Image (cartoon, rainbow, N blue to C red; front, side, top):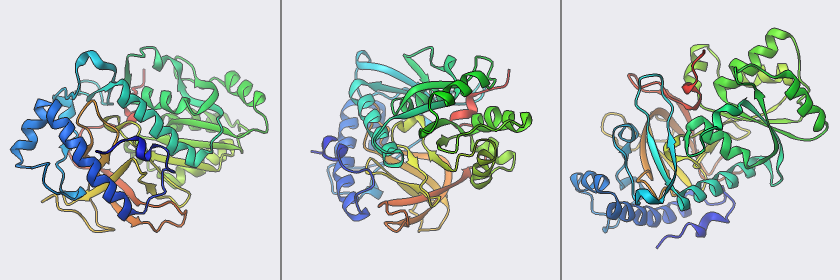
Length: 359
């Protein structure tokens, strides 16, 4: 029987892919049986596919749920009385959103995994943290949007957490400059969602011709790339733009979703997205769902060992991408690496920062 504690204390990128897959085969069997016993909707789907979880299976063989299913069904593998937090996905006005139900154990797993993954890039010490968003987003602690959940999760890795935007989503120069004065000559963590940083931090600074002294800053950002691509901004130009207004040279994008909170995929210094020991990625052909070869584009399937309160351990996303390597990244981290190309045609607009609409 797989136990989360088996891997919780390991360095997050320490397993070669062969060793990781042996662990994941056992863990996926246990998780699939767990959700079959506790979620009737999931059981109906798996039985309809003719999948026998008690037979021997490789990681590629386990059934996956389409991510959109979480918009139309409330999938739980625990009693509602055990739910301590409900997460909602992003989406534009009028769209249905995913609802992800967390019990105390699943929430704790997500927090621990996020901390382990991020610490590999940030180090073990908490840094002063500047959030490029408004604190108004966190008023309802029992139900979080993807954006609010991301802020709260990463805030646990920082100290003296300060919000750079006011309630009107305007850059609060006084608050930011006071924060920088308090932490002069210290490493600083800046966190936000890609489009929010671009729209409300970079553009404001660029228009004002003011430059903030954050050369010692480490920027973590994710989500909202659809809007960025609409403005012809890629990862490299985003990094260069930030450097021009605040001097920050260490900028890490990450890929993640509310349906698997905690199982984020961080971009390393070489520009590759990394799978940790808590999660993995499979890329599938969009015609027959067969696994794609390294370098071949397809639909991204995400696997996570964290969800216990809902059957979200294997999800087919509506994002496209490709595997870029296995155990061969120059940064030294083991496991699969991949890149994200974009979203499939006809997919609903989503992404952590796409929930924001201009007032």
